[in-house]
Image 1 (cartoon, helix red, strand yellow):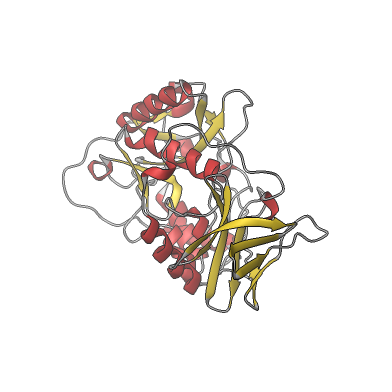
Image 2 (cartoon, one colour; image 1 turned 45 degrees about the horizontal axis):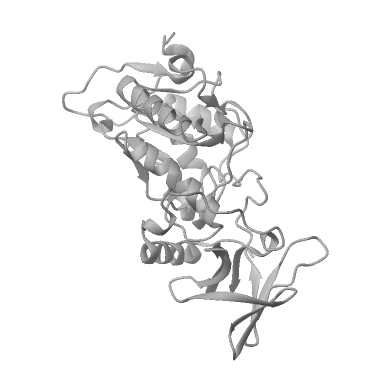
Length: 336
């Protein structure tokens, strides 16, 4: 089964009901989930009803989106008790993955949200990228009135070489499978860039660093994203009629990496995944995944950034409205 607009709405309701609570706040890092449970964790649906199998407080739980949450007590292999009168079965098949949840005669089939096991989320563009590029390059950003600061974009890799770059839009490893940037670089307006470096250093004291996927984004790329994305998924892309905070050099897409291993940490969902798992308050996944997500949020919010409501990886700097929408390509910026 695949995600649709109705499921997105249900997820918003589920996320709002949970909220940004202290239960997953970064105190001591939770223990990792037992390997035997990992194939069971995920999202499942029967008609309009959707459930998440998640891990919290060292136990599995079953969450009905927008409704009740039940702790699961292991009874036998793949079988769990909710109470003395209700049993839940989450069988792991020969592929090593659970594809269904059954309870009370109901069967919930696993939802395919488009980016499983660390893969890259992909859409099928509704228009050809080559056509979109020609159109976007001949279009103009929206006109803006008012007093704005002069742009002073700083290159993050130059400000601090320990910040890791994985600039997806300089490769085909992104949601459209196309190259948009000529160089794998990331830029932010200087106050935002310096604030990000401070967040990076704070995280370094805790064994983590920042891994950057995107910063300043030319407006024409935002237009391409919007025009290529199906309407029901456009909550995850900015409307070019308004411009993006990325266009102003005041938004950054990022995650954490482990200083000891050098590897990115695993969050509740992947970068650029257009699914409910991308919401910053999404209650699914594991306690450790949510803990890492909250650690990132704490570090960024302490330096004047705000997380975007639909993407755990996207943070806007507080002074974003002080800068004009930019449309220069990287090679035109003149940033050393």
